[in-house]
Image (cartoon, rainbow, N blue to C red; front, side):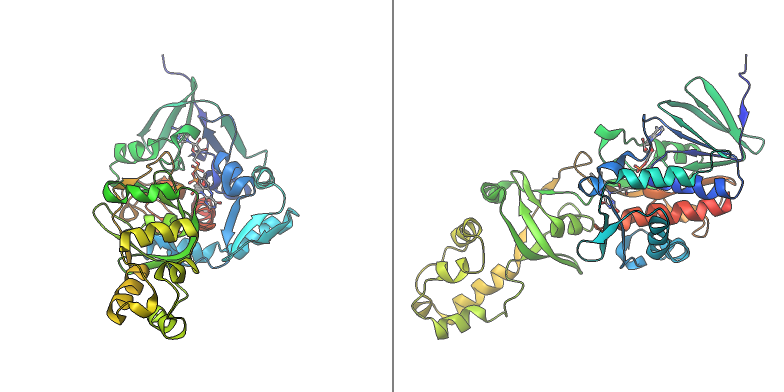
Length: 394
Ligand code: FDA
């Protein structure tokens, strides 16, 4: 026997940042919306992000801070819902915020305020929120999407995939978005962990002794570089500079680290002129945490007073310290990744409203899509902007 289904204008799967924003905008436009999540509360990643204060946007948001197979894809949505638009919303709800560093905006109080704000933005008469129920089947017939969830059935002419990526499975992240996309014939760019610590093995295991040591560095991979802090861990490398570069790193590639980003290439030669009696160890140790400089010096295998070391050797040493090549043997995976790179291919979607080109009424937004932002509020801004774009179209 077929169960009677409840009819909606749109069904949104996933009540994270993107799904909540989409539901709010569509609901405000008078659309009857069902927002479904298998978790027992909405916006869980908003709640845990930024140490509970959520780095909710970045004032330097720009399309070139996003990675995607189509680097132009995010432009349209990001330009129609900007960081300033989200700030205006936060201000309307009297939520205090501050800029921490590099344009990153955080709540002064708690990320709970943002989830409450997004829920308040969803009109009670148009948006129905269903929590804690698993989605068991999704199908499409006669222009209607049909969703079975927790023993109930709903239908709508529009369906939005907003179930996020695979990062942090412990928090309920699944590959559901990709399975659903494939079910409807949409291509998926292989999802990989991004903004993730890198692991070191082989000879580089030595660096694991430095667990807990951090230093300001420049990390490079190909033509991309980030100047921020790096942190050594018991498994390898982390810290903002490494998390950022991890999104660009591929297996088999080196990550080059400049441990002396503020010094000129001839700094050791200059030091030799002015302080010929100091040792190489002391010269390097002046600029780095002791444990780090000890390990680097051990690897460089050069010692003595600067005045007794050949200029060429000093030049080579300075170059090595500013182009230190790490060969990561992997990442800490989805369990530790802040986001998932890859996802539903942008080639399948309209950049204006996130609707699938070949599957009318099907939309994909947020992290589920092959658009990945830098660390620092960019991923939430994408969730808001893509959610807004689809919410305007439903
Ligand atoms: P999101 O993952 O938030 O939401 C998806 C929703 O779908 C979830 O509620 C989930 O329960 C639900 N779902 C999944 N599978 C389902 C299924 N099968 N059935 C039903 N529901 C299902 N970004 C940033 O800009 N600033 C920051 O400070 C941080 N900090 C941060 C910290 C940590 C620890 C993590 C893991 C991530 C961040 N991020 C971040 C990234 C940011 O959290 C992420 O990009 C957005 O939450 C993505 O929003 P979405 O709505 O697309 O997915």
